[in-house]
Image (spheres, each protein chain N blue to C red):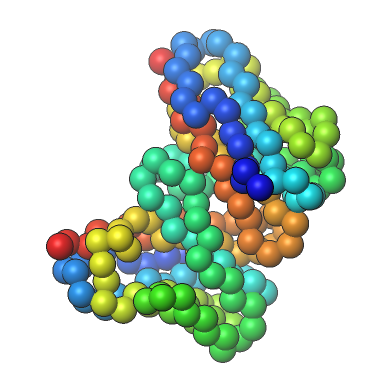
Length: 111
Length: 108
């Protein structure tokens, strides 16, 4: 298997623009997690899905953030409008049972 | 405060030295995971511990779980530059959470 695939790897955008991050989980995994990592706050759980259904989105910072999982092989994390404080590395991870498998992350810079 | 605390925050050791990283939970641990992250990369799974007193080893890395103390330790024997990176512990509570990480540098 190719592992968890995230795109884009790097994104530089200006404040106010819409940002969409994409994730393809490992086939057969029924849990998908979105995390944000910064030096100040570490690795924060934003939202997770089970069988494409959002289970816990209490970590989503505010209404500017939204996540969807239209099918078992694809998820998006959208920020609209983006702000400089959203600059971070965003990770997607999936699991069936046991450990999480992480993607390489999407590094977002908002100017 | 964080659900998982790690100590130390950072560690610098000379190659060949042993070291220990600790992870303490504010809640009962039912499953504890150790991951390693190199700068700019994703997290790589190292080991999972589920039972009190359980101990697992992989190459020169040993992890133990003390369920009663809600703690886990990660021990590296005879450290090498390849061990450098950030080590994170994670707890499986459906909403999988992580500690802040311990940054390890190994000087050649």
